[in-house]
Image (cartoon, rainbow, N blue to C red; front, top):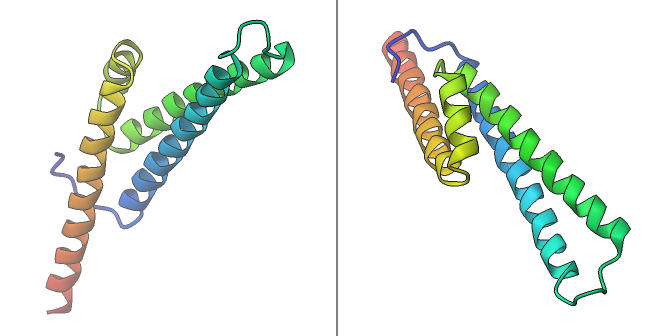
Length: 121
């Protein structure tokens, strides 16, 4: 974890990026689910639906990578290394990174509360 001074909005900005990344991967998961369910019966899939679900899956994953990159930058971590790991080790690296960044947010919020209590005393 970093030993820098915690700025009040930094934890909220990092948390917002993580939530957006989660919603993006959730949307891509829904598109993947619909894509798989449409192709269960051979020859029955509507090409337009399949194309739209495929594009939705691609867009959701791109948004997920973008928001995770933003979260990494806000957390002052190595963006390039983690994004390469996320692409190569999808979805495991995303899960590990999400847990690490979420714990960092909790630590930042705890330090901010402790600093506020010290100032009030």
